[in-house]
Image 1 (cartoon, rainbow, N blue to C red):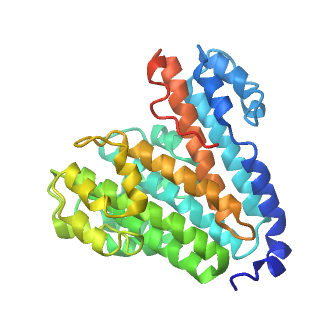
Image 2: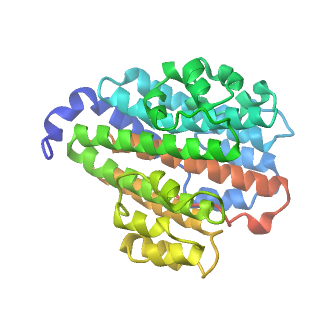
Image 3: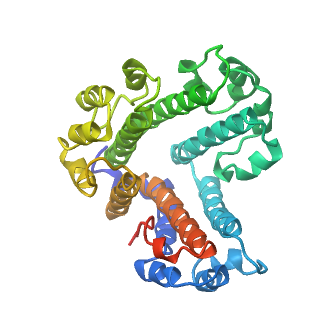
Length: 351
């Protein structure tokens, strides 16, 4: 159907595409970030945000403000926009929008299970969960002792159920197993989302393939770096990589045998799109890698808006808004802790 989207897309998707492009114009600009970085207190940040789309959500918050309050209210705005779009969507867009939340569901499951393992209060953990990843039986995750119970008691009725087939074992849950579970779930989720987008065809398939391939490659690099020096074997590491993306399959073979960050760099520099990311880092360091990946992701997400009649704009908007919330959290934390000199370290400008 590639090239013919213009004929039929607007019948069901035109209104929502217009809405999401309108939301996109409300994202904070570089000028907004420069003003926010000059703020002396959290109330100054609130005052500046009152002139943006966040104003309505923050206007009734009393002083003194906390960083968590700012992040919570900004996230609430994103959730409200998402719910509005989901209510108006028809198939296959509604399924596409639901896919976007599965990543948050996985993060919430891991957060609850890890917190329970360390004997944290369930209600306290539920407050930290991302609202887009909530489901009815999430509180009962705390009773599970191993993967099999986790699946049988709770997750069998959630959209994550098909992704659990690869990681059901009777081993008790510990930090290492939980991290392997997170990455196995993410791998299955990304592969499923990728195949769904491919089936949709047209510009959606083209743009989402690029965005999801980048996500899969970034996860492969992060898994490699985080597993250096652990008991994870090369074969175990290889199993956690997604079966698509620019690095698949030859890059994965090289990453699986990397023993330090410089070997990872050597493997990645063979791929031109990632060469520029690693060029920003000096040898032996990985601290700036996350920011470099976020900057590259933001560039790709912004490019998704350059084309019309596709669903990629919904995914791109949600990701850009999440990046904006991360930026606001970093700026607020730096202001609250009087670390103004570090305020630019992790801010990723969107426009």
